[in-house]
Length: 137
Picture (cartoon, helix red, strand yellow):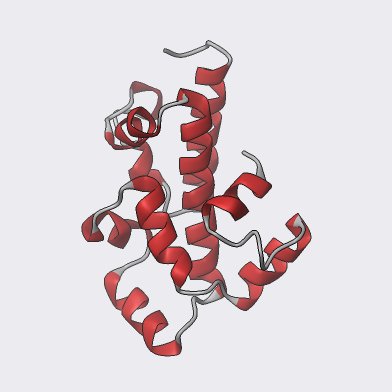
């Protein structure tokens, strides 16, 4: 997954000029607007978003007017996974549907359900890489 593509998908291309700046911004806390960008990117419902960032946690972030570093990392990971899925399937709707379908490569779980942790998002990226190289259909 390209960090540059993730930056673009979150609407941060004007604020972030390098991958290192993106890492710094995550550490400082992404703007709240990135949550809405993530929802649009993945076509996420509020319930699906709550699997990535719990509702209470997000409500607290809204009071602070900024995401915490942990919340920012979750948003960036999820956006990266959706961006990679879109690039792999070359069809936004097909990719978003794939993220919601139980997948045999991950013991019948949905890729979306794994995006809450870094290890889960990495596994989703691995499966997408295998699809891109023809290992999985």
